Length: 91
Image (tube, rainbow, N blue to C red; front, side, top):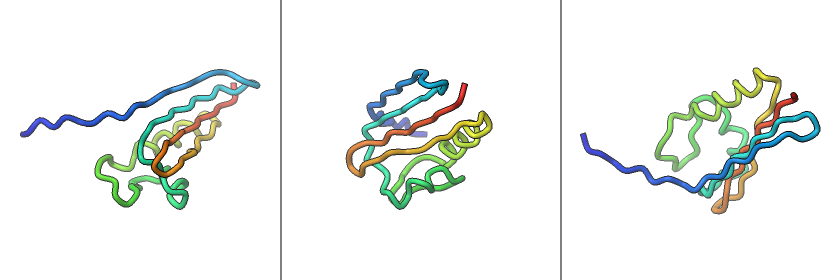
């Protein structure tokens, strides 16, 4: 078995409490998600065309966990620039 080194993308996580909500934002410098796929990234097994890694279960699992806590999760993305994933829960 060949050892492959994974390229790591710069990532920033921010969190805080405001107006009785706990909010988490995760920003990366990935290639961005085209608008037509932004809702689909939260579906089981979805992988955007051209994706080469992952199972398509990470964001769908995150969505189920967030919604089980009465929260919501969404993405803001600009192709070729960045992704920002937001998660917000009432406390």
